[in-house]
Each structure stands twice: as structure tokens, then as C-alpha cells.
Image (cartoon, rainbow, N blue to C red; front, side, top):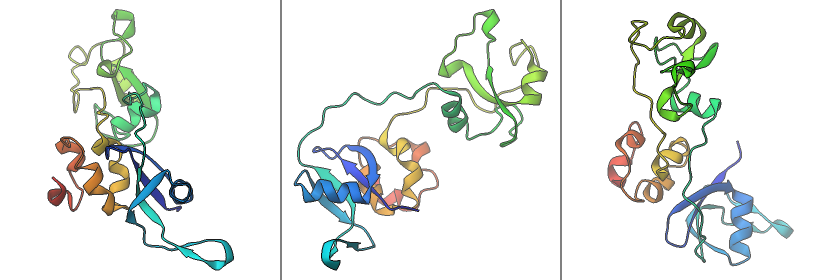
Length: 186
């Protein structure tokens, strides 16, 4: 697996993740500074060894709109951890289910969409969960765009990123669950 680097804005806001090579180029061209070094050296021209960046900070502030989660099938499945929200079954033949069916005026929004296995979706049919006598495991909601949530999948492998990601703003408790070292960062 290719090593990655965390990119911070000038104000230390986590922006994105890039390849170590891209991070090195940004540092080499004077556009960023290395805040945390990676484990492996980077071999350059004439067998020179360079420091591998793990966290870099841009020297100039980059304005960007706040991220908004895209409402796609894949994103709904990811939010629900690829688990049927009625029976809890993981993987397999998953579908999207409108909690309030579309034909009854149910909107196509985060708060009305859940992941359902084909059997539960068929059982529920064109009814609400209450009418079908089915219970949701959790109420659907728009995913958080807090950096602690967005970058959480990387924190197990890149523990040195935690101080930058979890320290930005107030990290939601859900993002901290199961991450070693999160207590020290919060």
C-alpha cells in the first residue's frame, strides 16, 4: 500500500490526503513545510535520501468551500457501514430504502434513506417501518463533514495524524470511538 501524507491548510485545518511523492514535491517547491516525518526515507536523484513527509502544512491559505457529503448509493452504504438498517446483516445484496416511500411523498434526502438487504426491503414494501412492524437500528442522518470523521479511516494506520485531525475544532465522539491515542489528542 502506498504511503500517504496529510495536507494541512496554513491555519492547520486538515484539507486532504495526497501521495508522499506529491507532498515531497510541494515541500521541494517551497509551497509547504514538513510538520511530521514519515517512517521510510524517500530515494531521490543520485541515490540521495530525503525525509518522507507524513504531515505537511501549506505556506499560503487555500480558500475552499466546506465539504458537503454527496448523496449517492455508495455514500449511504458507507454511512450505514454496509449493514442493513432493519436486520443488521452486513454485505450481500444491499439496496437503498426510502423510510417514507417516494410514492407517498418521501424525499430523496439523507434523512429518508437507509441501507436495506433485499429481503427486508421487499418485506417492508411501500410501507413505513411502523406499518411494516419493522424497527430501524438507527435513525438516518446526514453524515458529518468534521475532519475527525472524514479522516478517521486513516488514523489507525497514520497515528501521528491524530493530533492534527482530532485537535481541529471539537471532534465528535463517534469519530473518536475505537481510535487508540484519541484520549491524548482530545
